Amino acid sequence: MLTTDRNQQLDDLLGTSIAEFDIPDAVYAHATARYDHLARWLAGYWPDSRAGGEIYTQGSIRLGTMTRPLNPRDEYDLDLVCRRDLLETSTTKEGLKADVGLGLAEYVATGPDGTPKRHEGNRCWTVEYPGEPFHMDVLPALPDAEAMPNGILLTDRDLREWQRSNPVDYATWFRGRMVAELIMLREASAAAKGMDVEDVPEWQVKTTLQRAVQALKRHRDLYFADAPKDRPASIVVTTLAAMAYRGDGSLFEVLVDVVDDMPSFIEQRDGILWIPNPVQPKENFADRWRNHPDRARRFFDWIERAQHDFAGIGEERGLDRIVTKLGESFGEDPARRAGERFGTGIKNARDRGLLGISAGSGMLGAAQSRPVPRHTFHGDAPRPRGS
Amino acid sequence: MPRVPAARSLAQQAFALHASFPHALADLSPKRLIWRGTITPTPLSRCYSTRITHRMGRFPDVRVLGPALEGRPGESIPHLFSNGTLCLHLEDEWSSDMLLVHTTVPWTSEWLLNYEIWLGTGTWYGGGEWPPRRQANSPPPANMARSERRRTNRRRPR
Image 1 (cartoon, rainbow over the protein chains, first blue to last red):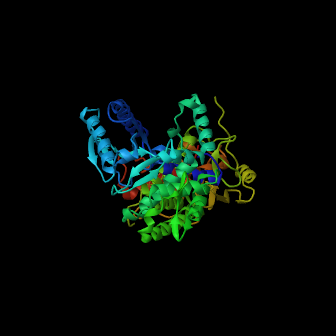
Image 2 (cartoon, each protein chain N blue to C red):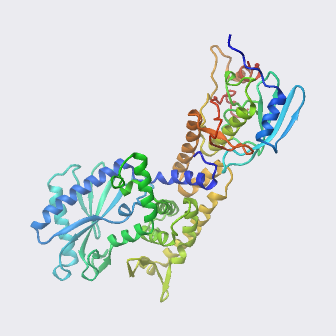
Image 3 (cartoon, each protein chain N blue to C red):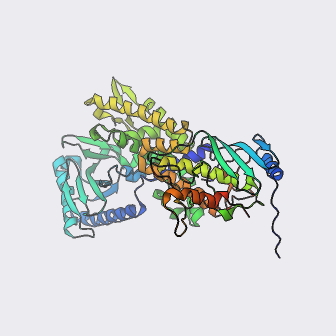
């Protein structure tokens, strides 16, 4: 806050707005405790059943890009993969799904804390915890013999075909795109807290790339609020953003550069729009656009709007205009929160004798020699309305 | 007995302002100093043309010349006197031994920053007393403005 660097100040405002979309630490800790309990129980249960298996996280919870749902009543999705170590030839899609469902039913029947309930979805099982702001989507999977050790086979929506996937290697790829900053942030956080780096969990720090992905997801959620089915999938947004990210720059610069460059990473293969899965290039994350060309068109419309909105944040003069622009991109509440943090930060600095001004411009910043003295804004009584 | 600090002369005020703001204009006469300078409270803010008028034995008064200050729909600007000057401090927070460049100017910058945030969010985060403190048995609000103004603006600093 106490900086006279324009980009850094813009980053403070952006960072505060985007941090509003983080899953609260307490919810995260609670959800991961529930998930750990389930995973441990299944690890003990499976050896007694037909085959071993493993349950692990995938998607935004694994990538550190979880974004608070637009509607506060909506729950956080924790995406889990449940891999059963069965041969592809020894089971069917229906059989695999039923097998995972059975394990979850047995778990729920033991009456764990939170009294979870199991529900059946199209291709996954959902474990819900009544009264808690999250649920787990458990996707049944088999090991992919052609992509060991981390490749998996998933059932598709209609339980017709096996689909290849590799969320573990994908997460490693994503992490690799930001690893230098991740290490730096963990070291800085450990130093600030007087802890060892190993004791600072990765989820407690957020890189510029993770923040940019969260910003894009929130902008998307607002843009498609009236047509959520047309929304580009998070994997599409995340992959293109990570591909476009060059590895450095301020949050504002990254946001603007990434959203400008994202479309250039969409390939055309035999006339088909293709967003390759970076860890298995034969998989097209944009596969759904083949049957829904209108969604592709809407994706490009959205990107154009995001380019315009993000660039606009930096073109404004006046904190009020910037707060308004942040509101247009991310919603009014996070923007107001950014203004609040900024204003209270300056007031606290003044109260603590840390605020100074620059000669020539009168710009507020860290006190070099003479701090701004305490004072009390005062004034006339507010004028009656309309007078 | 403790020594009472000497009041700063208008020339001393003008000289100190010039040292920090060499491009600003100061108009000095025996009884008053008018300083016009541009203040940009943050690198993201507008550049505000401001005028400080200081008469010996009076509280300095500060006006924003441009860009024109705006209200929010249905709300007038907080911490502004009804004559349009900025309300930066309580009576006992400024005295004539203080330099404008160390008090009034940074307070103006802070006021402008809080004004911009207020304009964007509807909340004044700079602290202060708003609505202003009322004295016991104070007249009804319509007359309030005058009495408050007298209390903080027209009285003489120590």
